[in-house]
Structure formats: C-alpha cells, structure tokens
Length: 600
Image 1 (spheres, helix red, strand yellow):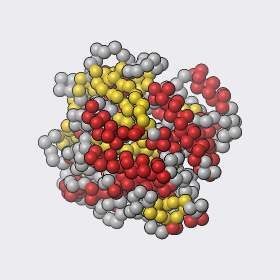
Image 2 (tube, helix red, strand yellow):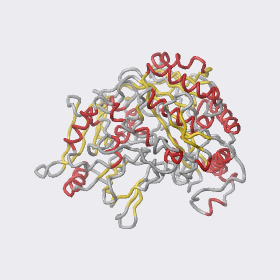
Image 3 (cartoon, helix red, strand yellow):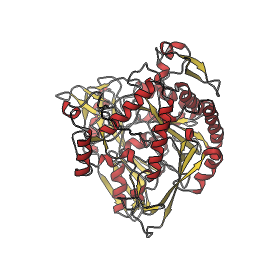
Image 4 (cartoon, one colour):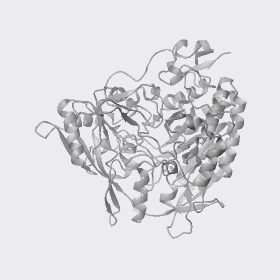
C-alpha cells in the first residue's frame, strides 16, 4: 500500500459527508472532534470487515478496503466460513471440491484492488483466514518462523523482534496478512540479498488444495525449498488453494539509520541507478511538478547503536474525518472548476508539511529532534498505527476507510527494468514540459514512490531487477466524469506498461494494466501447469483470474466512458466523454498511446 499524504485544508462548511454513518456525526462540530482526539489520545475506528452477510449467513458480499473494485461491481457469495484450524480448512476445501463449488480465500482487510478475492458466481464460498492468525513456531537457533496465513504483518514482525529476529524486507503497510501479501507479490524496497519481496524469504509452505475422491477431496501440500512448485505457490494470485502456514527465513534483529535528503530532480534518471545499489533499504519519492525528489537513505546498523526511533507516517495514522471531508471537498471543487493552480499550491503546502515533520519519523516514538533517526528494524520498516487505536464511533479513521470513501482514488503501480528507468523518467519529464501542472494531483497524495525490487525465481515474480513506480490519484464518484489532466496520467501509465514493458503490481492497478500481462512472464506455462495439477476443476479460479492468466478473453470492458475508469484503452470517442469535451487522441510523447484528452 502506498503512503497517502492528503493535503488537508480545513473549513467549517465542508461537512457534506457522502453516505454519512449517522446523523449525529454530521452535527458534531469540527473543534469537538479535535478536542476528543486530543484529550483521549490515540483513537481510530478500525476498518470494517470487507465481508458482510445477511442474517443466517446465506447471502454475503465481499469488497476491498477501499470499498470498490475496478469495474464497480458487487461481488456476492452464498456464504462465508471461518476455519480456526488447518483441519477445519481441509474440511471446507473438501466440501467445495466435492460439490465443484467456486471458492476463494479472503483476508482480514482485503487490500487487493482487483477482484482476486471474489469467488466465481454468487453461489461461491468465501473462506476467511481471520481466525488462522497464530504464530505456530519460532526457531531462534535456525532463525525461522512459522505462521498461519492470516497473521498480520504487524504481528509477524513484532513477534519476531520479541525473539531477537527480523524479517528485514517487507511492504510499508503492516495491515496485510502473510497469505495476502504472498499471493500478490507485495514488497518493500531493496536490491540487496534476495531483494525486497517477502516471498523471496519463504522456505516452506503448507497449502490446502482440492484432491481426488480417494484423497478425501482435499489435501495439504507440504512444500519446501527443494520442491519446484514452491516457485508457483509463493506468488499465486490465490488460484492454487488456501495457504495454511508459511515458514520464513529471518535474521538477527538489527537497527536502521534513516535520513531523508531533498534534491532537485535534474539528474534523477542517473541517480536512480546508483542509489539503490548504495543503500540497502533506500527508496525515492518523486515530486515531478515541483522538480524535486526525496531520497530515503536507509541502512542497517548494529543493534547496540543508541536509538529507539519510530516510523509512523501521518497518512497511516488515525485521522479526524473533518480533515478528510475538507480535503475531499476541496479536490472535488478543483476538479469541477479545472483549478490546476489550486491543486499545485495545495501540493506544495502538503509537501512542505511532510518534509518539516520528517514524514512522520520520530527519534523516540514521540518527537522528531533531527536526522538520522535510528531505531529497531520492527519500528522502522512497516507502519499503520490507525489500526491500533481505540474505537471512537468513526470520529477518526484510517484515511482510506471505505465506509466514508473520503479518500477515493486510483492506485497505479508498475515495475520497469532498471536499464529502462532513465528513458521512462525522461519521457515523464517531457510530458511535464508540455503540461507543467499535470501531476500536481499526484503530489497531493504523496508523489510517486519508487522502490527497488530484485529478479525473482517465483514464476509470477519480477523477471529482472526493476524499479517500481507507485502513485495515487483522484477518482470521481461518478464513473462517467473525466479527471483534470486525464490524458497525461493515462499516457504515463501506457508508457510504463507498454513502451517499457512494465509489470503491474498484482494487487493494484486499473483493468487495462493486466491486458495480456501473462505474456510478459517467461515461466507462465510452468505456473499454469502447476495450477492445473493443484486445481484441475478450477474451483479457485474466477472470471478475473482466468482473463489475467490468459485462459479466456481479456480484461478489457468496452462501454461508454470505459477509458475514464481504466476498463479499456480508448479507441473511439465514446470511450471517453465527448459531452465533457474529452476525446480519444494519440499521446503527446508516446504516439502509440491512446488517451482521453480535453479539447475545450
């Protein structure tokens, strides 16, 4: 999950909440909300379970943490089951296998943007891993840890630290489960050792799959490093079965020394090739409209170094809804009035605030006194304190909380081979020369996060050493409403994904990013071969995964306005919004791109 940094701009007339949770909330003055948070300390209403069922658990729906899938569809299932042991999990998979009923695993907070967790058809079954959340074994001597698949990353890294161990490379958001992050290839940032993806440190896995009638219709496959299919199972999109347990190779606990350096982006394309090789956990956040980049100089130091720093980004802390309401109202007004200048001014203000507050870093967990910030790896590597607060009836929430959809956005993330990164950066800069204000909207939500990823042995992992570009931007509540500078963002997506052969993050992106994506993976046939062996009836497949894996059709959805939502790449004007003066046109720099351009 990318770290969102909304530009908050408070006003007393912006409490027009979409789908408000209660009438009382709308009557609560903004100052009272802030007073409650100030007096009572850390509060936050944790996100709701993405699975909701009617009485009797007979009709259920599942969504993601953001409350919406790419095509705005509603995913239904006949029921949801909550195994508490592996034996119960086996029984549940066997029931689905015997009746040839579609089934999907779902995680606690369901952060996958595409419909990976949706069983095929409303008669399907959802298997939630919420209660498969225990640490099974910690082998301190061999530095290995075995956990159930529903364990949150937060709990994994903290339990490891209590035993003097560390999983050094992880995503930056700790509200994801081990099973979920493995299924989508989630990662941090590093070119060192085996790289920043968690799946590279999997040494064993237990996965429950369908089986023959003689085998009881389900069985546990116990995989180790010597088993070829581990390379299929450790990035699986959830189509092989349900992961029961995972064993990870850890290291002795260490500390990290972190400093953010701000530089002009004039030499960014050359610096990116150097920086990742010099700093073990380094990443870069690029603000192209402001022509600056923040380099995260982040390296390990011995555990005996002084420091108890904490990485707690503001965007992942409990946030008063008044701030989110105001931020959303401001941006919707700017979009409606085409106020690019207003967006740029707000982005500059937000960036200055983030920089002066050290991006949420503190030297002792309370205040920031200066760089470098030194702290234990488990306090520096991954964050999400909004999940840890006390319930406060939706006065404060995680910023992305789907119940209010106040931070309603698209997230695009693709990885480009390191050798092609300089050319991609230059193309983005060329677009900015033509439209200098076009990317201010990205900078309102934290700029473009660049993370390093090494080549993987996983069949659906990265095919070579790459740099991941991750950015968040405005999404309208109206699917037929175009965005400000729609064409520039679409062209950047198409440049990265098609001109330079970028690989989309499996758990993010809009539909068109996955069109024919399986052809980019040299070992795709090996993965599909294991898929057929593990699940010959395809009960763990759904329409989305079949299309993504090239088994039937493609992911394109052609209809009026489809390009606005990323459901297609436009080929005709009605794929855009002619009534709003947005027409399908070639790109400005990458002429093979087709984008929705404003001609007013």
